[in-house]
Image 1: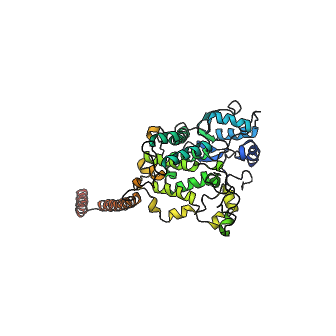
Image 2: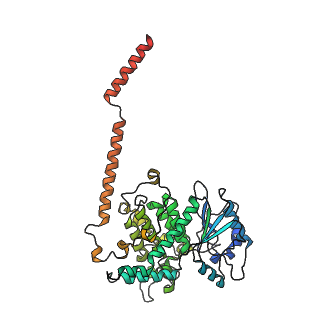
Image 3: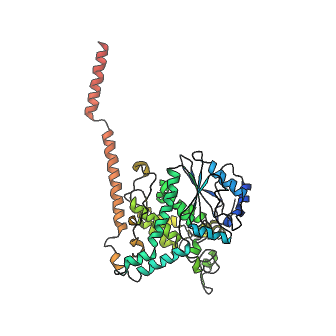
Length: 435
Protein backbone atom coordinates (compact mmCIF):
# COMPACT_ATOMS: atom_id res chain seq x y z
CA UNK A 1 0.00 0.00 0.00
CA UNK A 2 3.10 2.27 0.04
CA UNK A 3 2.14 3.83 3.42
CA UNK A 4 -1.03 5.39 1.99
CA UNK A 5 -3.25 3.29 4.20
CA UNK A 6 -1.23 3.70 7.39
CA UNK A 7 1.98 5.68 7.78
CA UNK A 8 3.17 3.60 10.75
CA UNK A 9 2.80 0.24 8.99
CA UNK A 10 5.24 -1.35 6.52
CA UNK A 11 4.76 -0.74 2.81
CA UNK A 12 3.81 -4.39 2.21
CA UNK A 13 0.98 -5.99 4.20
CA UNK A 14 -0.22 -9.61 4.28
CA UNK A 15 -3.95 -10.36 4.58
CA UNK A 16 -6.23 -13.28 3.55
CA UNK A 17 -6.54 -13.86 -0.19
CA UNK A 18 -10.22 -12.86 -0.32
CA UNK A 19 -9.59 -9.45 1.27
CA UNK A 20 -9.50 -6.63 -1.27
CA UNK A 21 -7.63 -3.34 -1.11
CA UNK A 22 -11.00 -1.58 -1.05
CA UNK A 23 -11.98 -3.46 2.11
CA UNK A 24 -8.70 -2.52 3.81
CA UNK A 25 -9.23 1.15 2.98
CA UNK A 26 -12.78 0.99 4.33
CA UNK A 27 -11.58 -0.66 7.57
CA UNK A 28 -8.84 1.87 8.36
CA UNK A 29 -11.09 4.61 9.87
CA UNK A 30 -12.44 2.10 12.42
CA UNK A 31 -8.99 1.27 13.85
CA UNK A 32 -6.79 3.61 15.88
CA UNK A 33 -4.16 5.25 13.63
CA UNK A 34 -5.50 3.19 10.74
CA UNK A 35 -3.66 0.12 12.03
CA UNK A 36 -5.94 -2.57 10.63
CA UNK A 37 -5.55 -6.32 11.36
CA UNK A 38 -2.65 -7.73 9.27
CA UNK A 39 -0.58 -10.89 9.38
CA UNK A 40 2.53 -11.29 11.52
CA UNK A 41 3.08 -15.05 11.32
CA UNK A 42 1.43 -18.17 9.87
CA UNK A 43 1.79 -21.65 11.32
CA UNK A 44 3.55 -23.82 8.70
CA UNK A 45 1.28 -26.83 9.28
CA UNK A 46 -2.08 -25.82 10.75
CA UNK A 47 -2.13 -22.41 9.00
CA UNK A 48 -3.33 -20.79 12.22
CA UNK A 49 -2.45 -17.12 11.94
CA UNK A 50 -0.99 -14.54 14.28
CA UNK A 51 -2.31 -11.11 13.32
CA UNK A 52 -1.90 -7.69 14.91
CA UNK A 53 -3.85 -4.45 14.95
CA UNK A 54 -4.79 -1.47 17.10
CA UNK A 55 -7.96 -1.02 19.14
CA UNK A 56 -11.29 -0.52 17.36
CA UNK A 57 -12.70 3.01 17.58
CA UNK A 58 -15.89 1.99 19.33
CA UNK A 59 -16.31 4.83 21.81
CA UNK A 60 -19.09 5.21 24.35
CA UNK A 61 -21.64 5.20 21.51
CA UNK A 62 -20.64 1.66 20.59
CA UNK A 63 -19.82 2.43 16.96
CA UNK A 64 -19.65 -0.54 14.61
CA UNK A 65 -18.08 -1.20 11.24
CA UNK A 66 -19.38 -3.86 8.88
CA UNK A 67 -16.10 -3.64 6.95
CA UNK A 68 -14.03 -4.35 10.06
CA UNK A 69 -16.38 -7.19 10.92
CA UNK A 70 -15.83 -8.69 7.46
CA UNK A 71 -12.04 -8.41 7.75
CA UNK A 72 -12.10 -10.16 11.13
CA UNK A 73 -14.37 -12.85 9.64
CA UNK A 74 -11.90 -13.43 6.81
CA UNK A 75 -9.12 -13.89 9.37
CA UNK A 76 -11.23 -16.50 11.13
CA UNK A 77 -12.35 -18.54 8.11
CA UNK A 78 -8.85 -18.54 6.58
CA UNK A 79 -7.99 -21.18 9.20
CA UNK A 80 -9.76 -24.42 8.29
CA UNK A 81 -8.75 -26.11 11.56
CA UNK A 82 -10.75 -23.93 13.95
CA UNK A 83 -14.16 -22.29 14.03
CA UNK A 84 -13.24 -19.52 16.45
CA UNK A 85 -10.92 -16.53 16.39
CA UNK A 86 -9.35 -15.49 19.68
CA UNK A 87 -8.78 -11.78 20.24
CA UNK A 88 -6.13 -10.99 22.85
CA UNK A 89 -6.25 -7.47 24.25
CA UNK A 90 -2.83 -6.78 25.76
CA UNK A 91 -4.25 -4.16 28.14
CA UNK A 92 -5.86 -4.63 31.54
CA UNK A 93 -9.63 -4.73 31.14
CA UNK A 94 -10.18 -1.54 33.13
CA UNK A 95 -7.78 0.35 30.85
CA UNK A 96 -9.48 -0.96 27.73
CA UNK A 97 -12.90 0.12 28.95
CA UNK A 98 -11.54 3.52 30.01
CA UNK A 99 -10.34 4.02 26.43
CA UNK A 100 -13.96 4.04 25.31
CA UNK A 101 -14.21 7.49 26.88
CA UNK A 102 -11.69 8.83 24.36
CA UNK A 103 -13.11 7.00 21.36
CA UNK A 104 -11.34 3.65 21.67
CA UNK A 105 -12.50 0.42 23.23
CA UNK A 106 -12.86 -3.28 22.48
CA UNK A 107 -14.59 -5.53 19.97
CA UNK A 108 -18.04 -6.74 20.99
CA UNK A 109 -18.23 -10.57 20.93
CA UNK A 110 -21.95 -10.17 20.24
CA UNK A 111 -21.18 -8.33 16.99
CA UNK A 112 -18.16 -10.30 15.76
CA UNK A 113 -19.21 -13.90 15.04
CA UNK A 114 -17.39 -16.82 16.70
CA UNK A 115 -14.92 -14.56 18.45
CA UNK A 116 -13.56 -15.06 21.96
CA UNK A 117 -11.90 -12.31 23.98
CA UNK A 118 -9.13 -12.34 26.58
CA UNK A 119 -7.26 -9.56 28.40
CA UNK A 120 -3.52 -9.98 28.99
CA UNK A 121 -3.13 -7.32 31.72
CA UNK A 122 0.10 -5.68 30.56
CA UNK A 123 0.44 -2.19 32.01
CA UNK A 124 0.94 0.96 29.94
CA UNK A 125 4.18 2.81 29.12
CA UNK A 126 3.89 5.07 32.17
CA UNK A 127 3.79 2.15 34.62
CA UNK A 128 6.77 0.57 32.89
CA UNK A 129 8.77 3.80 33.01
CA UNK A 130 8.04 4.13 36.73
CA UNK A 131 9.16 0.53 37.30
CA UNK A 132 12.48 1.08 35.52
CA UNK A 133 13.06 4.28 37.49
CA UNK A 134 12.78 2.25 40.70
CA UNK A 135 15.19 -0.34 39.31
CA UNK A 136 17.63 2.47 38.58
CA UNK A 137 17.29 3.77 42.14
CA UNK A 138 18.00 0.28 43.48
CA UNK A 139 21.10 -0.19 41.32
CA UNK A 140 22.80 3.20 41.46
CA UNK A 141 25.18 4.41 42.63
CA UNK A 142 25.64 1.00 44.28
CA UNK A 143 23.13 -1.68 45.29
CA UNK A 144 22.33 -1.61 48.99
CA UNK A 145 22.46 -5.17 50.34
CA UNK A 146 20.17 -4.33 53.25
CA UNK A 147 17.38 -3.11 50.97
CA UNK A 148 18.09 -4.85 47.68
CA UNK A 149 15.29 -7.42 47.61
CA UNK A 150 12.70 -4.99 48.92
CA UNK A 151 13.65 -2.35 46.36
CA UNK A 152 13.55 -4.89 43.55
CA UNK A 153 10.15 -6.16 44.68
CA UNK A 154 8.78 -2.63 45.05
CA UNK A 155 9.80 -1.81 41.48
CA UNK A 156 7.51 -4.61 40.16
CA UNK A 157 9.92 -4.97 37.25
CA UNK A 158 9.99 -8.76 37.32
CA UNK A 159 6.21 -8.80 37.74
CA UNK A 160 5.85 -6.88 34.48
CA UNK A 161 8.32 -9.25 32.79
CA UNK A 162 6.23 -12.16 34.06
CA UNK A 163 3.06 -10.68 32.55
CA UNK A 164 4.64 -10.23 29.13
CA UNK A 165 5.99 -13.80 29.09
CA UNK A 166 2.61 -15.11 30.26
CA UNK A 167 0.89 -13.18 27.47
CA UNK A 168 3.23 -14.53 24.80
CA UNK A 169 2.99 -18.13 26.01
CA UNK A 170 -0.81 -17.85 26.05
CA UNK A 171 -0.76 -16.74 22.42
CA UNK A 172 1.76 -19.40 21.39
CA UNK A 173 -0.25 -22.12 23.15
CA UNK A 174 -3.47 -21.23 21.33
CA UNK A 175 -1.73 -21.25 17.95
CA UNK A 176 0.43 -24.35 18.46
CA UNK A 177 -1.72 -26.64 20.62
CA UNK A 178 -5.24 -25.48 19.77
CA UNK A 179 -4.65 -24.54 16.11
CA UNK A 180 -6.58 -21.33 16.74
CA UNK A 181 -5.94 -18.11 14.85
CA UNK A 182 -5.18 -15.14 17.08
CA UNK A 183 -5.59 -11.37 16.75
CA UNK A 184 -3.63 -9.16 19.16
CA UNK A 185 -3.97 -5.47 19.88
CA UNK A 186 -3.54 -2.93 22.66
CA UNK A 187 -4.36 0.75 22.19
CA UNK A 188 -2.30 1.85 19.19
CA UNK A 189 -0.66 -1.51 18.57
CA UNK A 190 2.98 -0.44 18.59
CA UNK A 191 4.10 -1.17 22.18
CA UNK A 192 2.46 -4.03 24.08
CA UNK A 193 1.19 -5.64 20.90
CA UNK A 194 4.72 -5.74 19.49
CA UNK A 195 6.11 -7.23 22.70
CA UNK A 196 3.60 -10.07 22.56
CA UNK A 197 3.73 -10.86 18.83
CA UNK A 198 7.52 -10.88 18.63
CA UNK A 199 7.99 -12.96 21.78
CA UNK A 200 5.31 -15.44 20.69
CA UNK A 201 6.99 -15.79 17.29
CA UNK A 202 10.30 -16.43 19.05
CA UNK A 203 8.66 -19.30 20.93
CA UNK A 204 6.85 -20.74 17.91
CA UNK A 205 9.51 -20.52 15.22
CA UNK A 206 13.13 -21.67 15.70
CA UNK A 207 14.23 -19.44 12.81
CA UNK A 208 13.77 -16.39 15.03
CA UNK A 209 16.07 -17.98 17.60
CA UNK A 210 19.00 -17.77 15.18
CA UNK A 211 21.10 -14.62 14.86
CA UNK A 212 19.84 -13.71 11.38
CA UNK A 213 16.29 -14.68 12.29
CA UNK A 214 16.27 -12.49 15.38
CA UNK A 215 17.51 -9.57 13.30
CA UNK A 216 14.62 -10.13 10.90
CA UNK A 217 12.19 -10.34 13.82
CA UNK A 218 13.27 -6.98 15.23
CA UNK A 219 13.28 -5.32 11.81
CA UNK A 220 9.83 -6.66 10.94
CA UNK A 221 7.81 -6.58 14.15
CA UNK A 222 9.47 -3.53 15.73
CA UNK A 223 10.97 -1.25 13.09
CA UNK A 224 8.60 -1.88 10.18
CA UNK A 225 5.45 -2.03 12.30
CA UNK A 226 6.09 1.36 13.81
CA UNK A 227 7.40 0.98 17.32
CA UNK A 228 8.30 4.55 18.22
CA UNK A 229 11.99 3.99 18.92
CA UNK A 230 12.87 7.68 18.70
CA UNK A 231 10.25 8.76 21.21
CA UNK A 232 10.55 5.77 23.53
CA UNK A 233 14.30 6.39 23.89
CA UNK A 234 14.04 10.18 24.19
CA UNK A 235 15.01 11.11 20.64
CA UNK A 236 13.39 13.78 18.46
CA UNK A 237 9.65 13.55 17.83
CA UNK A 238 10.22 12.85 14.13
CA UNK A 239 13.22 10.56 14.58
CA UNK A 240 16.92 10.94 13.94
CA UNK A 241 19.27 12.56 16.43
CA UNK A 242 18.47 15.71 18.36
CA UNK A 243 21.17 18.35 18.64
CA UNK A 244 20.92 21.76 20.35
CA UNK A 245 20.24 24.75 18.04
CA UNK A 246 23.89 25.93 18.26
CA UNK A 247 25.30 22.59 17.15
CA UNK A 248 27.68 22.71 14.19
CA UNK A 249 27.00 19.16 12.96
CA UNK A 250 24.84 19.75 9.91
CA UNK A 251 25.24 16.15 8.76
CA UNK A 252 23.53 14.79 11.85
CA UNK A 253 20.94 17.55 11.90
CA UNK A 254 19.78 16.52 8.46
CA UNK A 255 18.97 12.98 9.63
CA UNK A 256 16.40 14.09 12.14
CA UNK A 257 15.04 17.27 13.55
CA UNK A 258 12.29 18.66 15.66
CA UNK A 259 12.24 18.88 19.40
CA UNK A 260 13.32 16.16 21.81
CA UNK A 261 10.49 13.84 22.77
CA UNK A 262 8.43 14.51 25.85
CA UNK A 263 9.61 12.58 28.92
CA UNK A 264 6.07 11.19 29.07
CA UNK A 265 6.72 9.38 25.76
CA UNK A 266 9.79 7.57 27.05
CA UNK A 267 9.39 3.96 28.13
CA UNK A 268 11.51 0.78 28.27
CA UNK A 269 9.20 -1.23 26.02
CA UNK A 270 11.97 -2.69 23.86
CA UNK A 271 14.19 -3.32 26.90
CA UNK A 272 11.40 -5.40 28.42
CA UNK A 273 11.20 -7.50 25.26
CA UNK A 274 14.97 -8.09 25.32
CA UNK A 275 14.75 -8.95 29.03
CA UNK A 276 12.01 -11.50 28.23
CA UNK A 277 14.24 -13.02 25.54
CA UNK A 278 17.08 -13.27 28.06
CA UNK A 279 14.74 -14.95 30.60
CA UNK A 280 13.74 -17.48 27.94
CA UNK A 281 17.40 -18.13 27.12
CA UNK A 282 18.07 -19.01 30.76
CA UNK A 283 15.41 -21.72 30.59
CA UNK A 284 16.39 -23.00 27.12
CA UNK A 285 20.17 -22.45 26.86
CA UNK A 286 20.53 -24.82 23.87
CA UNK A 287 17.73 -23.31 21.77
CA UNK A 288 19.32 -19.96 20.85
CA UNK A 289 22.12 -19.41 18.38
CA UNK A 290 22.97 -16.05 19.95
CA UNK A 291 24.40 -15.33 23.38
CA UNK A 292 23.93 -12.74 26.10
CA UNK A 293 26.49 -10.43 24.54
CA UNK A 294 24.28 -10.21 21.44
CA UNK A 295 21.36 -8.89 23.51
CA UNK A 296 23.50 -6.46 25.50
CA UNK A 297 25.06 -5.10 22.30
CA UNK A 298 21.60 -4.46 20.86
CA UNK A 299 20.56 -2.57 23.99
CA UNK A 300 23.78 -0.54 24.10
CA UNK A 301 23.42 0.50 20.47
CA UNK A 302 19.74 1.33 20.94
CA UNK A 303 20.84 4.30 23.02
CA UNK A 304 24.18 5.05 21.34
CA UNK A 305 22.58 6.29 18.07
CA UNK A 306 25.65 5.04 16.17
CA UNK A 307 23.50 3.10 13.71
CA UNK A 308 20.36 3.92 11.77
CA UNK A 309 18.45 0.83 12.90
CA UNK A 310 16.65 2.45 15.86
CA UNK A 311 16.71 6.15 14.95
CA UNK A 312 13.14 6.53 13.72
CA UNK A 313 9.54 5.90 14.74
CA UNK A 314 8.44 4.03 11.62
CA UNK A 315 9.58 2.49 8.37
CA UNK A 316 8.20 5.43 6.39
CA UNK A 317 10.01 7.95 8.58
CA UNK A 318 13.30 6.15 8.04
CA UNK A 319 12.71 6.05 4.29
CA UNK A 320 11.93 9.77 4.15
CA UNK A 321 15.22 10.54 5.92
CA UNK A 322 17.26 8.15 3.73
CA UNK A 323 18.24 5.87 6.60
CA UNK A 324 19.36 3.03 4.30
CA UNK A 325 21.53 5.29 2.17
CA UNK A 326 22.99 7.49 4.89
CA UNK A 327 23.48 5.24 7.91
CA UNK A 328 24.91 1.83 8.74
CA UNK A 329 22.73 -0.97 10.05
CA UNK A 330 23.48 -2.44 13.47
CA UNK A 331 23.06 -5.89 11.93
CA UNK A 332 25.90 -5.28 9.46
CA UNK A 333 28.14 -4.44 12.40
CA UNK A 334 27.15 -7.59 14.29
CA UNK A 335 27.33 -9.91 11.29
CA UNK A 336 30.83 -8.68 10.43
CA UNK A 337 32.17 -10.48 13.53
CA UNK A 338 29.38 -12.93 14.15
CA UNK A 339 31.44 -15.37 16.25
CA UNK A 340 31.40 -12.86 19.10
CA UNK A 341 27.67 -13.36 19.41
CA UNK A 342 27.33 -17.12 18.91
CA UNK A 343 26.18 -19.46 21.65
CA UNK A 344 28.53 -22.47 21.84
CA UNK A 345 25.77 -24.60 23.39
CA UNK A 346 23.31 -24.00 20.54
CA UNK A 347 21.61 -27.08 19.13
CA UNK A 348 19.42 -26.49 16.04
CA UNK A 349 15.77 -27.46 16.38
CA UNK A 350 16.04 -30.13 13.67
CA UNK A 351 18.56 -31.92 15.90
CA UNK A 352 17.12 -31.23 19.36
CA UNK A 353 13.48 -31.63 18.31
CA UNK A 354 12.53 -28.49 20.23
CA UNK A 355 10.77 -26.55 17.50
CA UNK A 356 8.40 -24.81 19.92
CA UNK A 357 9.43 -23.70 23.40
CA UNK A 358 7.20 -22.61 26.27
CA UNK A 359 9.11 -20.79 29.03
CA UNK A 360 7.85 -20.79 32.60
CA UNK A 361 6.52 -17.41 33.70
CA UNK A 362 6.21 -17.89 37.47
CA UNK A 363 8.15 -15.28 39.42
CA UNK A 364 10.17 -18.04 41.08
CA UNK A 365 11.48 -18.99 37.62
CA UNK A 366 12.59 -15.47 36.69
CA UNK A 367 15.91 -13.78 37.45
CA UNK A 368 17.13 -10.22 37.68
CA UNK A 369 19.46 -9.60 34.74
CA UNK A 370 22.49 -8.47 36.72
CA UNK A 371 24.88 -8.82 33.77
CA UNK A 372 23.03 -5.95 32.12
CA UNK A 373 21.55 -3.77 34.85
CA UNK A 374 24.48 -3.73 37.28
CA UNK A 375 27.39 -4.88 35.12
CA UNK A 376 29.44 -1.83 36.14
CA UNK A 377 29.35 -2.75 39.82
CA UNK A 378 32.96 -3.66 40.84
CA UNK A 379 31.85 -6.94 42.39
CA UNK A 380 30.07 -7.96 39.18
CA UNK A 381 33.17 -7.86 36.99
CA UNK A 382 34.43 -11.35 36.24
CA UNK A 383 38.13 -12.15 36.17
CA UNK A 384 37.72 -13.66 32.71
CA UNK A 385 35.13 -12.17 30.33
CA UNK A 386 32.34 -14.57 29.42
CA UNK A 387 32.72 -13.65 25.75
CA UNK A 388 36.31 -14.92 25.74
CA UNK A 389 35.26 -18.25 27.20
CA UNK A 390 32.42 -18.53 24.72
CA UNK A 391 34.75 -17.96 21.78
CA UNK A 392 37.08 -20.65 23.12
CA UNK A 393 34.16 -23.05 23.46
CA UNK A 394 33.03 -22.29 19.91
CA UNK A 395 36.48 -23.16 18.58
CA UNK A 396 36.53 -26.38 20.63
CA UNK A 397 33.07 -27.34 19.36
CA UNK A 398 34.11 -26.58 15.78
CA UNK A 399 37.21 -28.78 16.13
CA UNK A 400 35.10 -31.53 17.74
CA UNK A 401 32.65 -31.51 14.84
CA UNK A 402 35.51 -31.65 12.33
CA UNK A 403 37.06 -34.64 14.11
CA UNK A 404 33.68 -36.36 14.36
CA UNK A 405 33.04 -35.88 10.66
CA UNK A 406 36.52 -37.16 9.80
CA UNK A 407 36.01 -40.24 11.98
CA UNK A 408 32.65 -40.96 10.37
CA UNK A 409 34.19 -40.70 6.91
CA UNK A 410 37.01 -43.03 7.95
CA UNK A 411 34.58 -45.58 9.37
CA UNK A 412 32.55 -45.49 6.17
CA UNK A 413 35.56 -46.56 4.06
CA UNK A 414 35.77 -50.32 3.35
CA UNK A 415 38.78 -51.93 5.09
CA UNK A 416 41.28 -54.18 3.31
CA UNK A 417 40.01 -57.28 5.15
CA UNK A 418 36.42 -56.48 4.24
CA UNK A 419 37.36 -56.06 0.59
CA UNK A 420 39.27 -59.37 0.66
CA UNK A 421 36.41 -61.19 2.40
CA UNK A 422 33.88 -59.79 -0.04
CA UNK A 423 36.05 -60.81 -2.99
CA UNK A 424 36.46 -64.38 -1.63
CA UNK A 425 32.74 -64.61 -0.96
CA UNK A 426 32.00 -63.51 -4.52
CA UNK A 427 34.33 -66.14 -6.00
CA UNK A 428 32.84 -68.87 -3.81
CA UNK A 429 29.35 -67.86 -4.82
CA UNK A 430 30.38 -67.90 -8.48
CA UNK A 431 31.92 -71.39 -8.21
CA UNK A 432 28.85 -72.70 -6.42
CA UNK A 433 26.69 -71.43 -9.22
CA UNK A 434 28.78 -73.25 -11.82
CA UNK A 435 28.53 -76.59 -9.95
